[in-house]
Length: 186
Image (tube, rainbow, N blue to C red):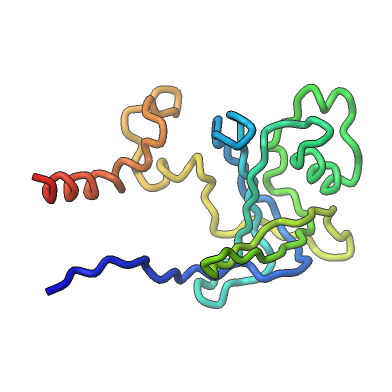
């Protein structure tokens, strides 16, 4: 009898396109990532929008990756300046704490990009300040990425709240796969 392997069907529904109210729910340090232009420090910013996914009954989330730089040409700087509605001061350019963004409202212009395989991804095209005529929204039903292991009881042996093993949170997910792989190869 044949054993068929195939790509699983995704039940993920991307955030709808359009201009919508959002609130920043997380800022994640992704560390140094390899890019076509060399290794660069990256950060991910996540937002919740004010629309609810009818399948999950939770707000849609949108995320964007940025190079951790405030140089003039950096997309992070461009998006932060339009979000804040003003340019950075010389003092702010010496160091801006991105964690201050958590809980801050804005409006996101979300567009859809479709891959050659037909997958749809929601991408942040633009960020503008919150519309003062609309009530602000708060983050709902969200645990910050850095707090997820703690909230799930997977604290492990840590020092100062940090794991000695990068991506330690993946180990419980990978161990069954590794055990299966070894059993198959044996």
